[in-house]
Every structure is written in structure tokens, then in C-alpha cells.
Length: 288
Image (cartoon, rainbow, N blue to C red; front, side, top):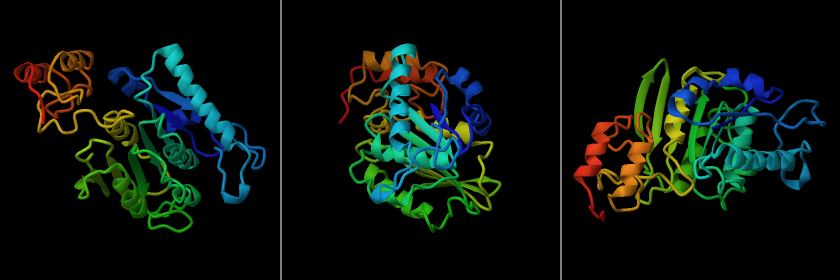
């Protein structure tokens, strides 16, 4: 789980924007706080951007190369799973991860931009990107990323675009979480390509809410590069790996995910003995 700090910030400051450390220990994943290359044009550690016509702060390609190098190092040094690389970010870092969704969807399975919307030039040139999970958290009073649009696309324009690209369900599950926060979830569709989730913070301003790290991990961790494993498990109980057959691979997935959300087949958020019994009870079933 990679996190990208706000413009002008540092990797260390990113830890206090969204602290994944205790959650990473509990759920057994690697968390990485990245740092932007120094931006000479604006005299800050600001993530690269490149508008049409060549206008750029000068380090867009440098930051993209850095992101790829970090992923390669995580895989080579820490045995990270290339299928399960996620990128979140705040403010300008969030805008950068929107860029990653459009240019690195072959390497990143899901993104989580907070208090940020996609740059308009990126939004207009994203059609070639593959489906990718998106968890977008945005306040209605955010000055940097106006909720109803302005210099960037509106929250609605973004979810309409990505829900269609992801082949997600067209009607969201809507849940009021209290405190002015409403969660909208467009579940992965029939092909299990990717889901889209949006948290609307009524009256929320330009900040990272305290609930961000937990909900981000809950959402992105469901995704792999080739889709959402087991998203149609209601039609095929026990098929954890999504290969349409319940068998030894599903049993191993449950064992590997024991105590975490990985391998969860009954939807209670934890892989435990109930999930094991579901796999055993459906052993050798071939799914439609």
C-alpha cells in the first residue's frame, strides 16, 4: 500500500496524513510512504504533472519512473505481490495517483485519492487505461478539488466514467455512516473487473479524515490486477480464487488469509473456520 503525500510535503509527513502502520501489522501488508522528486519550477517536493502542449513542472516522467522502481524493489526485496499493488494519496499526491490509474493500470490494482480529483487533461486522455479499483474520498467544501467541478471534473463525472470503464454495477449501495459521511459502492460487475467506491463528506474540507486508512484498505485489498477474486461468490460459494472450481487452491487461499480479510467467503470481513467449512462443503463444485 503506497501513500503519496500532499504537495510540498515529505514521506514522513505522509505517515501522519494516513497512518497505515498498525493496520499493516494486523493485516500483514507492506505500507510505503513515497516522496516526490524536488520540483525546481515550484521549489517544492510536488508530484509531477504534465499538461497538453508540454507544460510541466519538470518531474512527471521522473516520478513515474520512481514509482515503477519502488514497485520493482518491493517485489525483489520484500517479496511483494505484483498483482496487489495499491496507491493512495492526499491533495496533490491524490491527483498523482489519479494519473497512475490512467498510465499504470497494468501495474497498480486499485487507487485511493483523498481530497483530490483527476486533472482535466488526464481525465480526457484515460480511455486506454484498464479497469482499476477506485476509492475516492472527497468533501463538499474542498477548495482544491471542488466537489461539483470547476478546474477539475466533478465527483459525479469521475464516478460515472470509472463505473462504466470498470463494468461495475450501475446502481450503488448507499450507506449513511453518520457525521455527514455517505458511502456509495458500485460493486464489481459480472466480469469481476473492478469496483468503485466514493465517500461524500458533507461539509468536509481539504483534509484526510480519520477513517481514511481503514476504509481504503478494506476496499483496495479486494482487488488484484486481473480483477476482484470471488466477486460472484454468491453464485459459487467457496470459490475464493475465482477460477470457477472449488478445490485445493481455495483451501490454500483460506489458510493463507486466516485472521485477515483475504480468503473471506461468507462476507463477515474475517477469514476463519466458517470460510473453511464453506470451501469443504463445496469441494469439487464447478461454478457456472
